[in-house]
Length: 130
Image 1 (cartoon, rainbow, N blue to C red):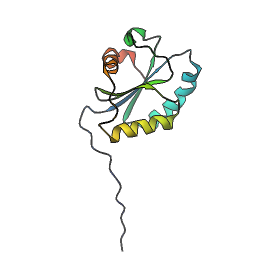
Image 2: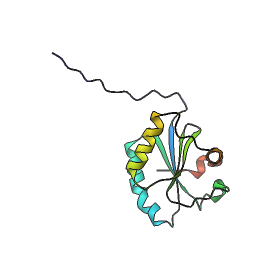
Image 3: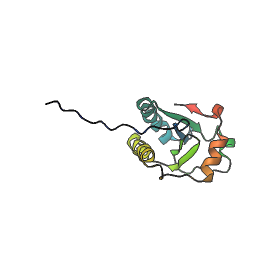
């Protein structure tokens, strides 16, 4: 008897629905400096997700009135739709669970107008790939 295993497939995504993770940090922040290697490792493990780094002081104009009080803060978007904006624990596993939860339930994680405005202000020249 031949046994086969059915491996669940990732849901197909329409064009333009790529995932982006933008880490909003500061160079002076020790937590951010310690967190970056873990985020770089996660970026290598998830090549289909674009991971970017924004130093909030270097890109203060792009942040506008958005006040980042806790580091790290992430902006996660699916295509042009922001799905999450907020502080996270600086642990790769936490970010992985958040990404998986957002990807598996399209109704969850709708970031507000503040996140949409930030995405519009963050141009390609302001985003440092990780």
